[in-house]
Image (cartoon, rainbow, N blue to C red; front, side, top):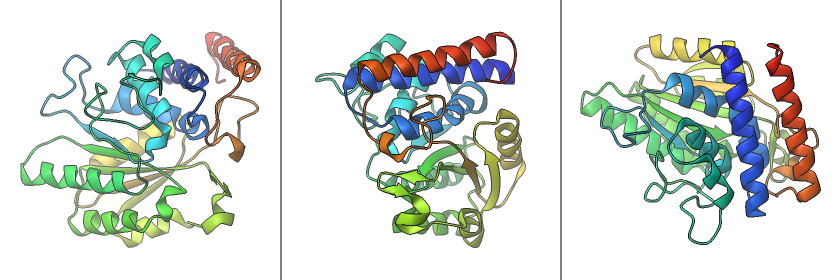
Length: 281
Protein backbone atom coordinates (compact mmCIF):
# COMPACT_ATOMS: atom_id res chain seq x y z
CA UNK A 1 0.00 0.00 0.00
CA UNK A 2 1.09 3.58 -0.55
CA UNK A 3 1.58 5.88 2.42
CA UNK A 4 -1.63 7.69 1.52
CA UNK A 5 -3.55 4.41 1.47
CA UNK A 6 -2.05 3.47 4.82
CA UNK A 7 -3.01 6.88 6.26
CA UNK A 8 -6.58 6.47 5.05
CA UNK A 9 -6.77 2.97 6.49
CA UNK A 10 -5.32 4.13 9.81
CA UNK A 11 -8.01 6.79 10.00
CA UNK A 12 -10.65 4.09 9.51
CA UNK A 13 -9.00 2.14 12.31
CA UNK A 14 -9.24 5.24 14.52
CA UNK A 15 -12.94 5.65 13.70
CA UNK A 16 -13.46 2.04 14.75
CA UNK A 17 -11.64 2.65 18.03
CA UNK A 18 -13.75 5.67 18.94
CA UNK A 19 -16.97 3.96 17.89
CA UNK A 20 -16.21 0.78 19.83
CA UNK A 21 -15.25 2.53 23.06
CA UNK A 22 -18.24 4.88 22.85
CA UNK A 23 -20.57 1.94 22.31
CA UNK A 24 -19.03 0.01 25.20
CA UNK A 25 -19.13 3.06 27.49
CA UNK A 26 -15.73 1.79 28.66
CA UNK A 27 -12.30 0.99 27.31
CA UNK A 28 -8.94 2.49 26.49
CA UNK A 29 -8.97 4.95 23.57
CA UNK A 30 -5.74 6.89 24.23
CA UNK A 31 -3.21 4.13 23.71
CA UNK A 32 -5.31 2.52 20.98
CA UNK A 33 -5.22 5.74 18.96
CA UNK A 34 -1.48 6.26 19.48
CA UNK A 35 -0.77 2.78 18.11
CA UNK A 36 -3.29 2.89 15.23
CA UNK A 37 -0.65 3.60 12.60
CA UNK A 38 1.47 0.65 13.76
CA UNK A 39 -1.56 -1.67 13.90
CA UNK A 40 -2.33 -0.58 10.35
CA UNK A 41 1.19 -1.11 9.05
CA UNK A 42 1.47 -4.54 10.64
CA UNK A 43 -1.84 -5.87 9.37
CA UNK A 44 -2.03 -4.21 5.97
CA UNK A 45 1.63 -4.16 4.92
CA UNK A 46 4.05 -6.10 7.08
CA UNK A 47 2.73 -9.40 8.31
CA UNK A 48 2.25 -12.65 6.41
CA UNK A 49 -1.38 -13.34 7.34
CA UNK A 50 -4.63 -14.50 5.77
CA UNK A 51 -7.98 -13.40 7.28
CA UNK A 52 -9.62 -16.35 5.52
CA UNK A 53 -7.28 -18.73 7.37
CA UNK A 54 -6.46 -17.07 10.72
CA UNK A 55 -4.62 -20.10 12.09
CA UNK A 56 -2.49 -21.01 9.08
CA UNK A 57 0.69 -22.63 10.32
CA UNK A 58 3.23 -20.38 8.60
CA UNK A 59 1.55 -17.07 9.45
CA UNK A 60 3.41 -14.32 11.24
CA UNK A 61 2.34 -13.94 14.87
CA UNK A 62 1.34 -10.82 16.79
CA UNK A 63 0.94 -10.43 20.55
CA UNK A 64 -0.67 -7.29 21.99
CA UNK A 65 1.28 -7.13 25.23
CA UNK A 66 -0.53 -3.93 26.26
CA UNK A 67 -3.79 -5.82 26.05
CA UNK A 68 -5.97 -2.98 27.29
CA UNK A 69 -5.60 -1.32 23.87
CA UNK A 70 -7.73 -4.09 22.39
CA UNK A 71 -10.03 -1.52 20.68
CA UNK A 72 -7.15 -0.61 18.36
CA UNK A 73 -6.28 -4.24 17.76
CA UNK A 74 -9.88 -5.20 17.05
CA UNK A 75 -10.40 -2.27 14.71
CA UNK A 76 -7.35 -3.25 12.67
CA UNK A 77 -8.50 -6.88 12.52
CA UNK A 78 -12.02 -5.87 11.50
CA UNK A 79 -10.83 -3.51 8.79
CA UNK A 80 -8.47 -6.24 7.53
CA UNK A 81 -11.41 -8.61 7.13
CA UNK A 82 -11.20 -10.96 10.09
CA UNK A 83 -14.74 -10.05 11.18
CA UNK A 84 -17.35 -7.36 10.35
CA UNK A 85 -16.47 -3.77 11.21
CA UNK A 86 -20.05 -3.39 12.45
CA UNK A 87 -19.26 -5.85 15.26
CA UNK A 88 -16.90 -3.31 16.84
CA UNK A 89 -20.02 -1.78 18.37
CA UNK A 90 -20.38 -4.92 20.51
CA UNK A 91 -17.09 -4.30 22.37
CA UNK A 92 -17.37 -5.39 26.02
CA UNK A 93 -21.06 -6.19 25.63
CA UNK A 94 -22.42 -9.30 27.34
CA UNK A 95 -21.97 -12.28 25.03
CA UNK A 96 -19.72 -10.45 22.55
CA UNK A 97 -16.60 -12.14 21.20
CA UNK A 98 -14.85 -8.77 21.51
CA UNK A 99 -13.91 -8.79 25.17
CA UNK A 100 -12.20 -5.98 27.04
CA UNK A 101 -8.85 -7.71 26.52
CA UNK A 102 -7.88 -10.00 23.62
CA UNK A 103 -9.02 -13.61 23.89
CA UNK A 104 -7.54 -16.15 21.48
CA UNK A 105 -10.39 -18.58 22.07
CA UNK A 106 -13.07 -16.09 21.04
CA UNK A 107 -11.72 -13.61 18.50
CA UNK A 108 -10.58 -14.48 14.96
CA UNK A 109 -7.02 -13.33 14.31
CA UNK A 110 -5.93 -13.09 17.94
CA UNK A 111 -2.82 -15.24 18.40
CA UNK A 112 -2.48 -14.83 22.19
CA UNK A 113 -4.76 -13.79 25.01
CA UNK A 114 -3.27 -10.86 26.90
CA UNK A 115 -3.98 -8.15 29.42
CA UNK A 116 -1.76 -8.76 32.43
CA UNK A 117 0.93 -6.20 31.71
CA UNK A 118 4.42 -7.53 31.07
CA UNK A 119 3.32 -11.02 30.11
CA UNK A 120 2.67 -10.57 26.40
CA UNK A 121 6.31 -10.13 25.46
CA UNK A 122 7.12 -13.39 27.25
CA UNK A 123 4.56 -15.20 25.10
CA UNK A 124 5.98 -13.58 21.97
CA UNK A 125 9.50 -14.61 22.92
CA UNK A 126 8.26 -18.17 23.40
CA UNK A 127 6.64 -18.13 19.95
CA UNK A 128 9.86 -16.83 18.40
CA UNK A 129 11.91 -19.51 20.17
CA UNK A 130 9.48 -22.18 18.97
CA UNK A 131 9.90 -20.92 15.42
CA UNK A 132 13.66 -21.30 15.71
CA UNK A 133 13.42 -24.79 17.23
CA UNK A 134 10.96 -25.88 14.54
CA UNK A 135 13.06 -24.24 11.80
CA UNK A 136 10.09 -22.17 10.61
CA UNK A 137 10.29 -18.88 8.78
CA UNK A 138 7.46 -16.99 10.50
CA UNK A 139 8.17 -13.78 12.36
CA UNK A 140 6.76 -12.62 15.69
CA UNK A 141 5.75 -9.07 16.59
CA UNK A 142 4.69 -7.73 19.97
CA UNK A 143 3.50 -4.28 21.02
CA UNK A 144 4.17 -2.92 24.52
CA UNK A 145 3.29 0.30 26.27
CA UNK A 146 6.00 2.53 27.68
CA UNK A 147 4.34 2.36 31.09
CA UNK A 148 4.12 -1.40 30.74
CA UNK A 149 7.88 -1.77 30.50
CA UNK A 150 8.10 -0.80 34.17
CA UNK A 151 7.23 -4.49 34.70
CA UNK A 152 10.25 -6.64 35.54
CA UNK A 153 9.01 -9.58 33.50
CA UNK A 154 9.56 -7.51 30.35
CA UNK A 155 13.30 -7.47 30.97
CA UNK A 156 13.49 -11.16 31.81
CA UNK A 157 11.92 -11.84 28.42
CA UNK A 158 14.26 -9.37 26.72
CA UNK A 159 17.27 -11.03 28.35
CA UNK A 160 16.18 -14.42 27.03
CA UNK A 161 15.48 -13.08 23.53
CA UNK A 162 18.86 -11.39 23.27
CA UNK A 163 20.75 -14.33 24.69
CA UNK A 164 19.12 -16.67 22.20
CA UNK A 165 19.63 -14.36 19.21
CA UNK A 166 15.93 -14.38 18.26
CA UNK A 167 16.21 -12.41 15.03
CA UNK A 168 12.65 -13.44 14.11
CA UNK A 169 11.32 -11.24 16.95
CA UNK A 170 10.35 -7.55 16.75
CA UNK A 171 9.45 -5.81 20.01
CA UNK A 172 7.62 -2.50 19.51
CA UNK A 173 7.29 0.02 22.33
CA UNK A 174 4.54 2.64 22.02
CA UNK A 175 6.30 5.59 23.63
CA UNK A 176 3.38 8.02 23.95
CA UNK A 177 4.82 9.26 27.24
CA UNK A 178 1.66 8.76 29.30
CA UNK A 179 0.24 6.06 31.53
CA UNK A 180 -2.84 5.92 33.71
CA UNK A 181 -1.30 7.99 36.52
CA UNK A 182 0.34 10.64 34.35
CA UNK A 183 3.64 11.10 32.56
CA UNK A 184 5.81 7.98 32.46
CA UNK A 185 8.89 9.97 33.46
CA UNK A 186 7.08 11.21 36.59
CA UNK A 187 5.56 7.88 37.65
CA UNK A 188 8.68 5.73 37.20
CA UNK A 189 10.95 6.78 34.37
CA UNK A 190 11.77 4.11 31.81
CA UNK A 191 14.24 6.25 29.90
CA UNK A 192 16.43 5.72 27.96
CA UNK A 193 14.33 2.94 26.42
CA UNK A 194 16.60 2.25 23.46
CA UNK A 195 19.73 1.88 25.58
CA UNK A 196 17.98 -0.59 27.87
CA UNK A 197 17.11 -2.88 24.97
CA UNK A 198 20.61 -2.49 23.56
CA UNK A 199 21.96 -3.72 26.89
CA UNK A 200 19.94 -6.91 26.36
CA UNK A 201 21.55 -7.47 22.94
CA UNK A 202 18.77 -6.01 20.80
CA UNK A 203 19.15 -3.91 17.70
CA UNK A 204 17.18 -0.77 18.57
CA UNK A 205 15.56 1.66 16.16
CA UNK A 206 13.85 4.93 17.12
CA UNK A 207 11.01 6.10 14.87
CA UNK A 208 8.14 8.55 14.65
CA UNK A 209 5.23 6.15 15.17
CA UNK A 210 2.98 8.23 12.93
CA UNK A 211 5.39 8.27 9.97
CA UNK A 212 4.96 5.32 7.62
CA UNK A 213 8.29 5.90 5.85
CA UNK A 214 10.10 5.55 9.17
CA UNK A 215 8.03 2.53 10.21
CA UNK A 216 8.67 0.83 6.87
CA UNK A 217 12.42 1.46 7.03
CA UNK A 218 12.57 0.08 10.58
CA UNK A 219 10.70 -3.09 9.62
CA UNK A 220 12.95 -3.65 6.60
CA UNK A 221 16.04 -3.20 8.76
CA UNK A 222 14.64 -5.66 11.30
CA UNK A 223 14.10 -8.29 8.61
CA UNK A 224 17.62 -7.78 7.27
CA UNK A 225 19.26 -8.10 10.68
CA UNK A 226 20.52 -11.56 11.65
CA UNK A 227 21.67 -12.85 15.02
CA UNK A 228 19.76 -10.46 17.26
CA UNK A 229 16.15 -9.37 17.94
CA UNK A 230 14.97 -5.86 17.11
CA UNK A 231 13.28 -3.31 19.35
CA UNK A 232 11.44 -0.45 17.64
CA UNK A 233 10.81 2.46 19.99
CA UNK A 234 8.13 4.61 18.42
CA UNK A 235 7.43 8.13 19.61
CA UNK A 236 3.70 8.74 19.43
CA UNK A 237 0.93 11.02 20.64
CA UNK A 238 -1.58 9.44 23.01
CA UNK A 239 -5.08 9.96 21.63
CA UNK A 240 -3.70 10.78 18.16
CA UNK A 241 -6.33 12.15 15.78
CA UNK A 242 -8.88 13.27 18.36
CA UNK A 243 -8.29 16.86 19.41
CA UNK A 244 -9.37 16.69 23.05
CA UNK A 245 -7.74 13.30 23.68
CA UNK A 246 -4.27 14.11 22.34
CA UNK A 247 -1.49 14.00 24.96
CA UNK A 248 -4.07 13.78 27.74
CA UNK A 249 -3.58 11.05 30.36
CA UNK A 250 -7.24 11.39 31.37
CA UNK A 251 -8.17 9.54 28.17
CA UNK A 252 -6.09 6.50 29.04
CA UNK A 253 -9.13 4.51 30.10
CA UNK A 254 -12.50 6.20 29.68
CA UNK A 255 -15.14 6.41 27.00
CA UNK A 256 -16.43 9.55 25.26
CA UNK A 257 -20.00 10.60 25.95
CA UNK A 258 -22.35 11.34 23.05
CA UNK A 259 -21.17 14.92 22.55
CA UNK A 260 -17.51 13.93 22.81
CA UNK A 261 -18.11 11.08 20.37
CA UNK A 262 -19.58 13.50 17.84
CA UNK A 263 -16.58 15.82 18.23
CA UNK A 264 -14.13 12.93 17.88
CA UNK A 265 -15.78 11.63 14.72
CA UNK A 266 -15.82 15.16 13.30
CA UNK A 267 -12.08 15.42 13.95
CA UNK A 268 -11.51 12.16 12.09
CA UNK A 269 -13.79 13.28 9.25
CA UNK A 270 -11.59 16.36 8.82
CA UNK A 271 -8.56 14.07 8.50
CA UNK A 272 -10.44 12.14 5.79
CA UNK A 273 -11.03 15.41 3.93
CA UNK A 274 -7.35 16.31 4.07
CA UNK A 275 -6.32 12.85 2.92
CA UNK A 276 -8.84 13.00 0.06
CA UNK A 277 -6.89 15.99 -1.24
CA UNK A 278 -3.84 13.75 -1.35
CA UNK A 279 -1.89 15.37 1.44
CA UNK A 280 -0.75 14.49 4.92
CA UNK A 281 -3.41 14.99 7.57
